[in-house]
Image (cartoon, rainbow, N blue to C red; front, side, top):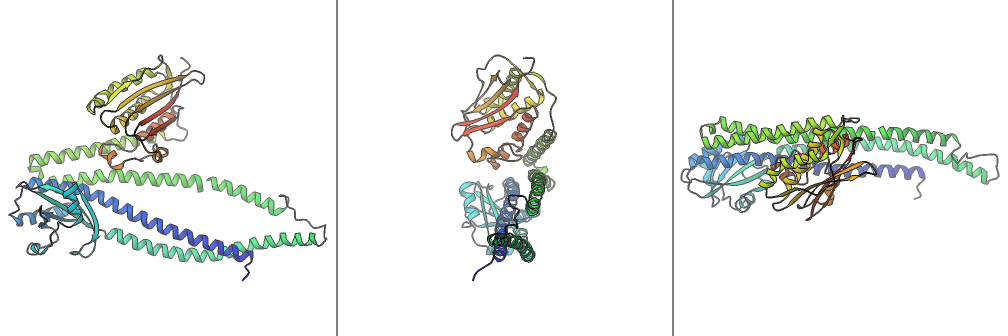
Length: 483
């Protein structure tokens, strides 16, 4: 069967729309499920630490199953999940979702993947259908030490009904969108194909008349006819509009990503704070050891939130499109020596060699002193924080008198960064190793602040790294006219 240009355009448009919907569905489904389950696991892991600590501090004996069952039931509402306390040999000591007389009927938990992993590696996680509760659950487990010296395992579980419900809603929403989209696509593709075919037929007719000897007719090609003028006008309009759904889309994406990342960064410490406070209110405040532990947790999480808010405020001041700092002559060697001296104790503590490399004579740069100190402090902090013991961290600068520029380098001999991460290092909240960065107190905003601060001083920042050899951050500043 021979298809005309109109039918081909229509079928092509329809195929592309169907393909796009299919790809979008697959991507959204995987992304939504992965993001939600990851967030749930992070929350469960924080709560599990508190449960394991409480179980260890309670110092109950395995010979007192009633007390273990009471403890599991008491911890369950605080953790907002199912709490199971398991003996070293896999026998359940307590379960918040099972009556006391039914505890003996529970199977041995030694073969449970999360329990086995917790005993071997200190932490275990598994997602599966619960035989007891008959629903999909996420399990996390962590060992603790009982009063008799044996190691038990604390397990926390939460139903994934929210994830399953979101998946069901996604299926329905995408099905409705697909039906509506295909319906609209049929009408629009048919109309577009008809218009395109009509224009082509008109051009074909002109060519046929010329071939038949009607030399007075003109196709007005080479961009001289009304269709070409209209095409140029439409192209110009399309270019303008495209530069404007791109700029707006970029801004909207940045706003959405910022809100999502900031909310995520704040949610974990807030949840940890609430859990710690609830545990203290539930009686742990009467135990001096436990009370001090939870107060330390509260202090660390509050300090983490304060650092995040401080970095967010700094970043908001630097991110203005036309933001330029008032610049004055600043002695670069003085600032570098001060920052190296301030970071020296931390480097010594981590067994790193921090030194100022031989550099040329002193120089003055056009800079904001506070922001320059912040840039150096962030770069040195990163190097010290992520370098293993025995590494070297050096600071140097070179002067380009021809172009009136100074290049400052902060280099380390640490583990290095894989090339795939380098283009995104200066993005807000981007981390090469998320878990390690948070554990070391990083907010994910330090390098973004460095980038914006340097650019606000009319400079640029660069990064080079080789896995196994180290990383070097460089930034440029203009020499002062007073130099």
